[in-house]
Amino acid sequence: MSKALMARLDRLLANLGYGSRKEVQALVTSGKVIIDGKPLKDAGVRIAVDATLPERMTIRGAPVDPPAPLVLMMHKPLGVVCSHKEDGEKIYDLLPRRWRLRDPALSTVGRLDKETSGLILITDDGDFLHRVISPKRHVPKTYLAKLDRPLAGAERDIFAAGTMMLDGEDKPLLPARLEVVDERTARLTITEGRYHQVRRMFAAVGNHVIDLHRERIGGLFLPNNLEPGQYRILPAAEAEEVFGDA
Image 1 (cartoon, rainbow, N blue to C red):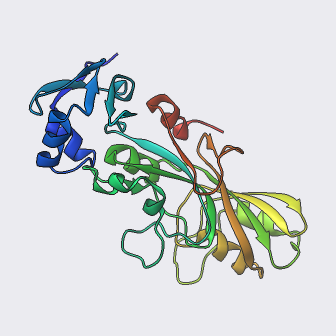
Image 2 (image 1 turned 60 degrees about the vertical axis):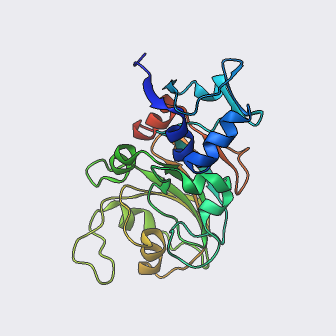
Image 3 (image 1 turned 180 degrees about the vertical axis):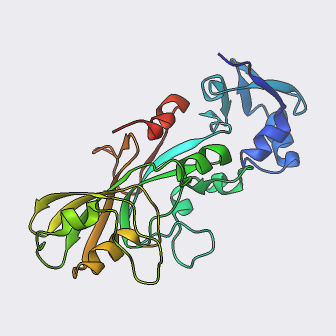
């Protein structure tokens, strides 16, 4: 087990979004911050910070939020955006309000467009984020696509060939794997993340995606019991499963 980092209590709680350092000081002096069963009185005290902290510390009677690095698995619902800058309801609005004040900030690992649902990862760990989205990794992503028209029958071979070109691009797509579910539903696994790639692939073979849902990223699958808008924290070992074979 790696050695726990030490951090000043007021700086730690401010970075977790619990308020300014002055507001954190007020929490401490009022006895609302408890660690290992004992209320803390000094906001400047240094404490050990590791993944066990939420088991040891409470704020106003509730477990403290997990410290960085944090990885979340979320079931993104339709109608929300993944960008901080886009208009409309944002995926971050589904998280506790104070989490928007965390430092380092939370970001999605890649994006799903507004009209796509399913598995997305959110993290404050820049190294983890860049490892997942790195073009060198070829982390597979699986989507369930419902189509406007029946499949023609040649799509599997066309997508697998590694020669398909999308409009406006000069580099062919890497081979992709298509599984036919029924005549208007297909499961597609890709190892790239080009702009609206799945929708553009089906458009290139004369079809139109009317519903798109991401089921898997690498070795991580969206659980059946995680409802749209819900999320859960991934322990470090489970988060690393994204790099596993599946």
